[in-house]
Structure formats: structure tokens, C-alpha cells
Length: 185
Image 1: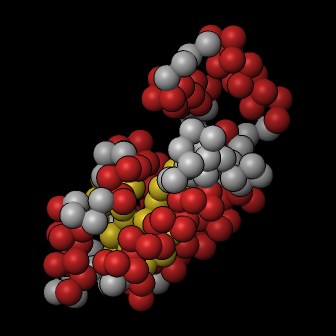
Image 2 (image 1 turned 135 degrees about the horizontal axis):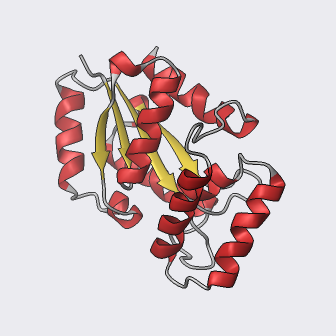
């Protein structure tokens, strides 16, 4: 029986978490994923996904919930952008939904800068020389759209590391692995 819900922004997030959950050996206890389709939708209390989640929690089908949102950058969004703003606003949503007792949150970003998204987190786990190479390519390519930037970064990473797509042993993964271990134990 699935008793864990993971709420995330998009399909790439879900694929990433399915890979990490399987790596941790929790593949048999797959989570119920709620894909919100963007960060702003997490802050809409009337979102039907919250209604469905609350029904599953109230019926005992879901016992633990992990919210996963990108930090993004506060310079682009002074309300929901940045690690602190995202955490603050998400805590308000969790409280208004009255699910504090079963909920945890993980804000995706580069742990050193507290800025960015899933791809920034993944990039932070590769050696500096390779990271700089990818960053330089993105800068000289002059991709303006955040979505294009994220998609291209994801593709570059997947092409460059087809055999071992994520360095799960990197110390940046430890807090996330701790969260997932809590969820599935």
C-alpha cells in the first residue's frame, strides 16, 4: 500500500525522485506523486490536487507527505522566489491545509547558494571543472528562457553522464536521502 505522497513541480522532478527512491532501495514502496505543473500552483489553496491529497490523508491512505519545490531566485520573484521565501510561503500553505503533522518540505537548489532548481542541485554534485564547462556553454549559448535553460541543462547532463546519471554519494544528497528515508521507514 502506498502511504507516501511526493508533491513536485514537474515530470523531471518525478523521474529524478523515482530514480533516487529506487537507488535507496525503496522501489517496492513507490510514492504517490502529485505533479503540480509549476511552482505557483503550490500556493493556490483551491488546487484540486490538495483536495485529493486531503481525502487520501483523512482516509489513512497517505501517512507522510513531502513537498518538493524549486527555490528559484528572489530577484525574479520577490514573493515566492528564493529559498527563504519559498519555505515561508510553503509553510503557510501546509498550515492552512492543516497537514503540518504529516508534512515535510525539501527546497531544490544549489545548496551552496540557496538559489536555483533541480538542475542547479544536480549540477552542484559534479566536479567543478565539468560544472564550469556546462555553465560556460549555457552562458555563451545565450538561452533567455528559464524553461529552455533547464531543459538544455537536463539534456547536457543526461548526455554527459549516461551510465551514472547522478552522483548519489555526493554530500549534497545527504539531507535529501535523510528526508526520503524518513518517508519510507
